[in-house]
Image (cartoon, rainbow, N blue to C red; front, side, top):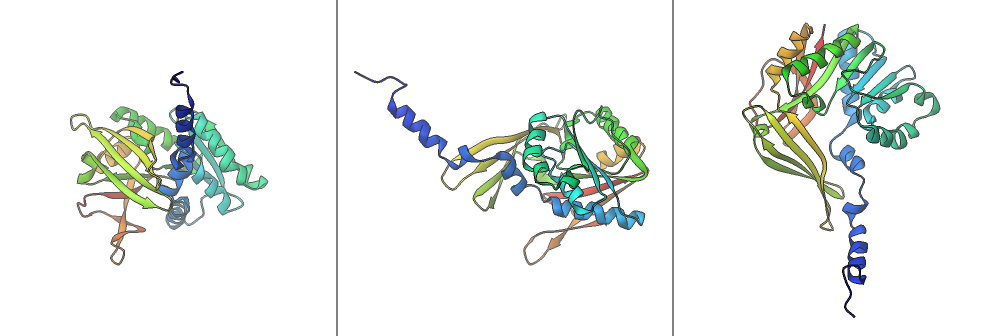
Length: 282
């Protein structure tokens, strides 16, 4: 008798496939290891707010918060810090609840709230700081949508509150390309899959490759508009923000890479690729 597709060879193949590193990997754990450094991010916004306002911020809202890793870092910093995280994806919020909020002390857990909603609709108390990091706000592809979002942020800020967001660019940002970065146990692949110069539409993916040859393809995918830094600053002004400051990353000559330190600038080099922070104030 000849075995069909449901015979042992296929069962064995499935078993072998389930044992690969890609099959066992958790995409959120990999993302946080490859992309996020919440400690450095909170260091920057905390110190910059204090420098500009002469006081410590207490209330922080993380828009497009994903796993709420940053919001959890905020409440761990001081006993009177409060955080709110907003995200439209209920599944990723649930992952954050199970893996991040569950690790907080009971007193810390009481000072963080997660909201499963659209940032354009969600209503929260007034905040000292609002964050929109990892270029997440680029999902707003039309200028009027972006202006509406920025106005919503302005409405939720205290009188001396600050809106922090990030931006990336450089001439490589307009190219179709793949960048590979090795990490312990995996390789992170940033895939700029397509770019339309007519309307600015940008499609990007994140893949993870493993030493055993297995791959976690399209672990994350993004449909964005590639906004330029002048456009973002102009729309912030249109939304009512009176002042914006750009913080450029310094350069480590010894390591030949970004230093991780950010400085206010009015002029910068036209590098192939760069990442910056923006602070927007009333």
